[in-house]
Length: 95
Image (cartoon, rainbow, N blue to C red; front, side, top):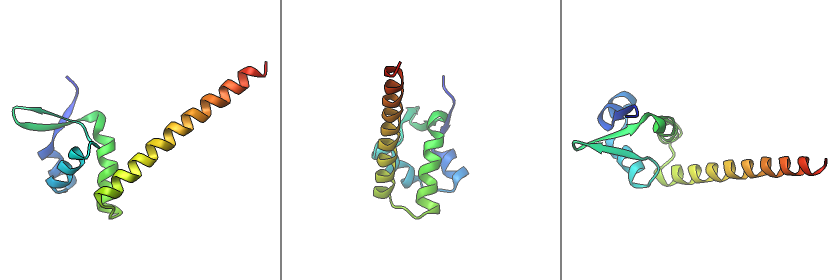
């Protein structure tokens, strides 16, 4: 099984409100697993969680702002990947 950390541990370690974690999950920004009525975040999602927590607590961005920033960054990453693909395709056509 993948490494994971419980929601309660995250709340203690990062000194955040449990409602913030739950809001991220409800908004579909985090994927959790539940076992024996305990919610866990997979370590694969931890970097994303830390990013959201930093935006919210350090930069004072509200949850709708976190969602907007996240979606815009995802779009930028897709466009950057598409741009690279097109440039590679153009480069291979020149031969």
